[in-house]
Every structure is written in structure tokens, then in C-alpha cells.
Image 1 (cartoon, rainbow, N blue to C red):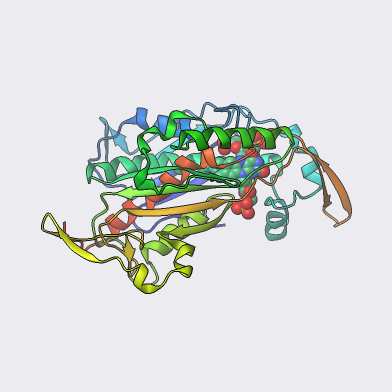
Image 2 (image 1 turned 135 degrees about the vertical axis):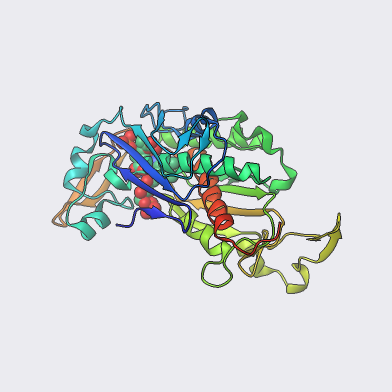
Length: 358
Ligand SMILES: Cc1cc2nc3c(=O)[nH]c(=O)nc-3n(C[C@H](O)[C@H](O)[C@H](O)COP(=O)(O)O)c2cc1C
Ligand SMILES: C=C(O[C@@H]1CC(C(=O)O)=C[C@@H](OP(=O)(O)O)[C@H]1O)C(=O)O
């Protein structure tokens, strides 16, 4: 199992959902970046379980302990180690799952790959691991902020309830005004209601997180196999339950003619820009200086609070009785995770890029 992300800036994570702790090591982080640890904790609070009526009821305070690499409020250029305790695990919820496989979770594939698995809370396959990405992503975002780069994500769809306005017509400063993290207040109410209803029925919903990175200079990304869009897509698809990524117009390009979707050039304040941004800020795998925006589709959570037919370890039929504390929809908590993965990819590429002209 490869547990490390990145080229120059790397993140290695460890830990299982019901073990004593999770944590990570960030290597290659540049020296001299001022770190606001309160802001790192705030970002973790946006992801933590038990934060609202529409998330898992597992209560973790997710207080991060930064162990190394930061001295007198600044990064040292040395490895940044950190740890987060697991305190509210309830492993008895998983006694049936020890005997059988949840359809569409990772129980069967882990068993097939390793011949064993930590069934408690899904072990390593649990999205609990994403807390580590948020620590690293929050630090990366602070480095990017000093370069004038900002990253904001929000919930743009839950089931069939969709925000129609594009990101640049929305007020992204109000994303956290509601618990589903949707900047369209009316749609947020409908989304929250839909998630609450699904939860009552013991069911779950999917959704989309949209993310925008602003202030990215032209020139980030490796032009062939390491295309910036490929790296972003891989980073997003490494998030639990992510099943699709679109960059710029994405799949909507398919129904347009070339003449309708050219991003024409113009000169603005003595710099070359485009008048539209169908490309989502990336052309030829390289950032072009426009906003980078992308959508990540998340499937409905696999663990249902109802009886589910499955098979046991021998392949004989069995019924799983829905039990435990699970998210009825991952998107409200996926918002800071998508921001974090975007920040890690962009900072990594900034550090990788030797030819960038600023
Ligand atoms: C923020 C977040 C929270 C999640 N919460 C749950 C959960 O409570 N229960 C569950 O079964 N899956 C949950 N998932 C999804 C599983 O972790 C995921 O489905 C599992 O690891 C299998 O991977 P796959 O769906 O990518 O194939 C969550 C995912 C994310 C991103
Ligand atoms: C613990 C977290 O979320 C968990 C993600 C998760 C899964 O299968 O991904 C299953 C649930 O685990 P448990 O049954 O142990 O509570 C969620 O609560 C977290 O995100 O920190």
C-alpha cells in the first residue's frame, strides 16, 4: 500500500479509524512560512465528525498536535510531523461487518488484497484518514496565500438539488453560513432537508463539491504525463467516495461546438488573459493564469441504516443489519478535503516548477 502523496512536497499518513491515533509527516515543505495554527485547527473543525445534524454522530475533537518542523511560528524546512487522537471509536458496531462484506465499501477489496482487514470502522479505508490531508492542506494553503493564491470549495449539488449559478456568480464568503456549506441559501435549505429525510429512511445521498483556485500564476504543471489537470484529478479521485472529476466545462464540452467554447485572448493590465474560461484555467496541462475550477462527484455513503443483503467471508448469503454512526451524505465534510487536496497539488507544482516567471 503506497501511503505517500506528492512530488517535492510529500504527505505520508498513517493510522486506522479505530486505532489509537492517526497522523502524518509532511516533507519538502518550504522554510520560512509563517504558520497560523488556529487556522489549521479551524479547517480541521470544518471536517471533523459530529459537527452537525447531517453528519456522522461520532464525536472527535480532532485536536492536532504538531510535533516538529515549526519553530517560533515559522516552518523550518524540516519534516512536519503531526498526530490526531482517536477517542470516540465504537468498534462493537462492526461485529457483523467482521463476518461479512458491506456492499460498495472497501471490506471485500481489502480482504482480497491483503487476506485480512481491520474491520473496526473500516480501518485504513475509513475517511478518518482525510483529517491528515486537511492538516497538510491547511499548511499548504497558508504558503499559497503568501503567493496570492486562494482556494475555496463549496457544495454545489446534493442528489438532484443543484446550484445553477457558476462559482463566479456566487458569494463564496458565505459558504460556512449553513451546515451543508452551500453558498445558495435557498438550495442549502433544500439540501439539508433532503439529507435529513434520507437519514430518517436509513438511506444516503451523493453530491458534488465545486472548488476554485484564484491567483494561480501561468506556468504550473508538467506538460505531458504530469499535466496539472491529471494531477488534480488523481488527487481528487484519491478521496474516499469520489467517483468523478470535471475540470472547467468538463463533460459539458461534449455537446458544444469548438466555435462556441474557444477561450479568446485579450490584454488586461499589460498581461495576457482570456475573455472566457471554459478551460478551467488549464491548457496543455499547464495553468494559464485564469481561475482553476473543478467539480468532484461523491457517491452516496455505502453503509446504510437498514437491512442489506450481502455475503459472508465464504460467499454465503447473509444480511447486515444497519448499525453505527455514519454520514448520510459526505459532501458537507468533503468541502475542506477537496480544498486541501487542491492546495497540496498547487504548492507541490509551485515547488516543482523551475521555469516559472513571476
Ligand atoms: C468525509 C467523508 C465521510 C465519509 N463517511 C462515511 C461513513 O460514515 N460511512 C461510510 O460507509 N462511508 C463513508 N465515507 C465513504 C467511505 O470512506 C468510502 O466509500 C470507502 O472508503 C470505500 O471507498 P470508495 O467509496 O472510494 O470506493 C465517507 C467519505 C468521506 C469523504
Ligand atoms: C470517523 C470519521 O468518519 C467515519 C468515516 C467512515 C467511513 O467508512 O469512511 C465511517 C464512520 O466511522 P465510525 O463508524 O468509526 O464512526 C464515520 O464516522 C471521520 O471522518 O473522522
